[in-house]
Length: 187
View 1 (cartoon, helix red, strand yellow):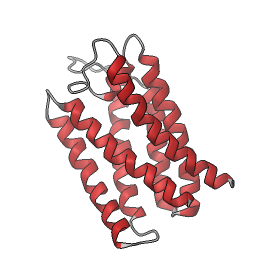
View 2 (tube, rainbow, N blue to C red; view 1 turned 45 degrees about the vertical axis):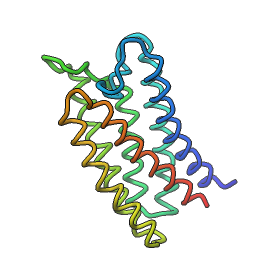
View 3 (cartoon, helix red, strand yellow; view 1 turned 180 degrees about the vertical axis):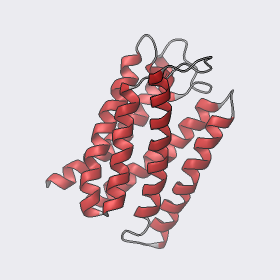
View 4 (cartoon, rainbow, N blue to C red; view 1 turned 90 degrees about the vertical axis):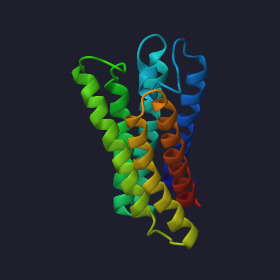
């Protein structure tokens, strides 16, 4: 297997693993309500290291796949997926504040800024990848995902009682696209 294919498979695994760990963590973390709480809040308190490690491992695998995607798919797609990966690493390092909070800690502010960058880069990657080996189905999938991710991200921030649910929908839609992109590029 070539180095690029290994990096692409790593990116697919990283995205899929991230989603799997989120859902397992949702089921086992005490006092955590996945319908209400953001994924990042799982990094707070007892057992928080699991979500922190999830951010760092998935982010590393996606950042590395960005190198291969830049060569196989296109420079901008690779750069943007690399930004997603580096952003996930930073989201793990700079732990979120609990929601709601009266005051934000500096690390919570950094976490929030990085989170916006992750979803913005993912959105951009969808549109740049739509031009690569275009078929009607691939273009459609990329464009629909590129529109759905920011709409769902804003929805998650706009609602209170179900924000965690909407964020998870955003993540599943976006990270599934990352799996498909990496696997398509590895083929």
